[in-house]
Image (cartoon, rainbow, N blue to C red):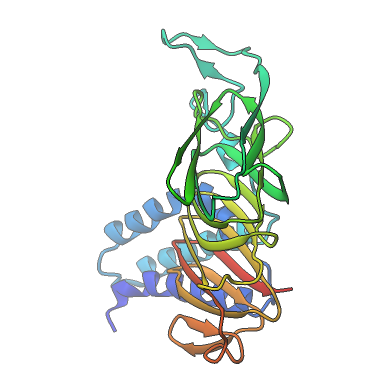
Amino acid sequence: MKRDRLFTGMFLLGIGILFLLNNFNIISFHWGNLLGLWPILLIISGVNIVFPHYNSNGAAAVKVLVFLALFSLVVYRGVMPPDNHFWNRNFNGHTFFNDQNNDDEDGSDNKNVVKTESSGTYNEPYTPQVKVANLNIRGGGVTYVLQDTTNDLFSASTQEMGGRFLFSTTASDSGKTINFNTKNNSHSMNWDTDNGNKASIKLNPNPEWNVDISAGASKLDMDFSKFKIRNLRVKGGAASMDFKLGQPTAGNTTVEVATGVSEVSISVPENAACQINSKTGLSSKNFEGFQSKNDGQYQTAGFDAAPKKIYLNLKGGISDFSVKRY
């Protein structure tokens, strides 16, 4: 084996051990905590450039020491409680995903800007003719919550801090499409729901729903168990996602989740037939109550014979995926 590959090999071996320990619940490792450690990649590249051939004992010692220091830092950050405040840190006088320090449009710094809170309500009436409803949600920097039903087709109450919501609908013969978007003027995200943008959503339980969410850096806490979900498609970046599904519809329920660096938790009914197809890269997986069928595929017992099914298609970079049954 070429000795110049030993440093990279040790680092990959260590990361693999962390995945294994996390998957067996020996440790609780939060990959989202590593966002602030991205300069480690520059250090690894620099070490490999400075010591390209790794031929001397001195170079070997340096690489081992650097590896131990970096890996210790990764372990230390990963086992700490989930860090939802990385994006609120200050870099060179600019605070990302926080409204405390914003620049005016003329370029001047406003260090003492006080956020002005406003609220809004959005409603779309329900008519029995609507058999299928489509909900499109766009925009990051928001906490989205779905916990209850409504007699309307759709209703939402919002807390708006530095952003505003845009609402529109289109109708067809037997369906309706609802567009609920966020225009975040300050490009802010605050995980503290008392001081950030928040939307509390309610849906009508009668139609079958197709839900499409593209939320960027957001927090999603959505209980779909009271609704007939035909398709759920979620795309997020650095996000926290918690979904609870109900029984599958007659035409089956398909869920697609694609994330960057996120923590994703999905709950499915204990008696529902469910299949997971995962392409999760360097992500950790905890699929409680599922049987591994082949590479990246997991099923509940009796899945093939079930008349109605749930399909979970999971894609992620460095994320924590958890699927449990209730």
